[in-house]
Image (cartoon, one colour):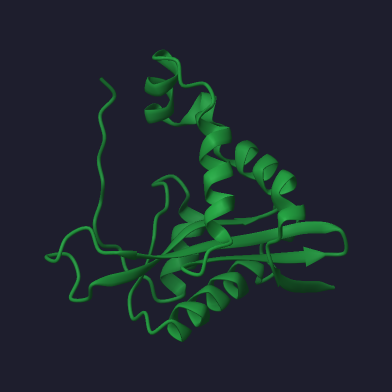
Length: 161
C-alpha cells in the first residue's frame, strides 16, 4: 500500500542514488559533458546535495510515495520568482523541478497523485501558476502533464560548444 510523506534526512542517500541513475549525467546531458571537460566531476553529487538541503526549507516541498521500505516515487517542488515579467502575469511561480516514479509503479496513477499533491501544496501557498520541464523524448511524461492541464509553453534550446 502506497503512503505519502515529506522527505526526511534519512531518505537523502536513497533519493540521491535514484536521481543519479535517472539523469545518467555522464551520458545524457550535454551541459554536464561540457562541465566534465573542465573538471567538474562532482556536479551530480553537489547538485543533488543542494536540492535535498533546499527541500527542507519552507519554499520547497519534497513529497515521497512509499511502499513499505521502498521509495516508489517522489515529487520536488519549489516556489521561485519568475525569470521575466513578460513570461507570466505573476511575480512568483511554482516549479515542479523533479518527479520520478520507479518503473514497476508506473501506469498505476502514482505520477498523477504526486503532481496533484504538489499542485495542492502550491495552492496552499497562494501560487497560481505551476511550471514543469520535460525532455522532448519523454513522450509519456508529456502526455501525462497535458492530461493534468499543463500546456506547452516556452521551449529552451541549447547548443554544445
